[in-house]
Image (cartoon, rainbow, N blue to C red; front, side, top):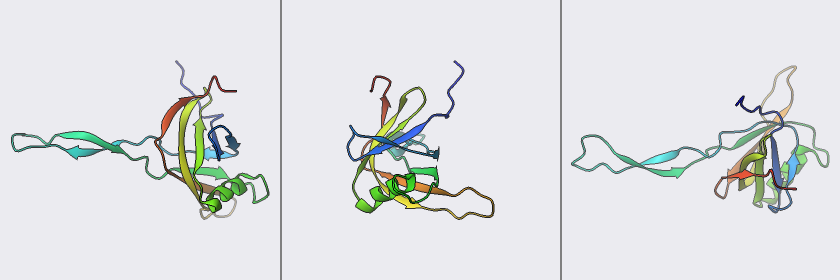
Length: 141
């Protein structure tokens, strides 16, 4: 197998899981799933510490976008409406082979500082409110 490029990866968002639309101009996405923390199970008879896996923490889910203005239908306007509503939204990150991840979360936006001659960007921080699940949308319409 040759591997898979990130070209064509998209982030979809919607108020319902059945009505997701692409948020355009995604530039990068964060680590997903997260590694579980460790719960120590060492007893006085152990000669080394022992552990069992605990909760997974996806950490800060920061998705960076090329800023295309505040006009109606722009990526910024779409995500700002989600932020301003405070409502939980449904998300899918879909790779070119139609595999990916799905979860629910709340949006907060930030705009990083820039210098001369740089493209404007913004960050959509998505706080997960559900488990992050692996998906396959190859059979979806």
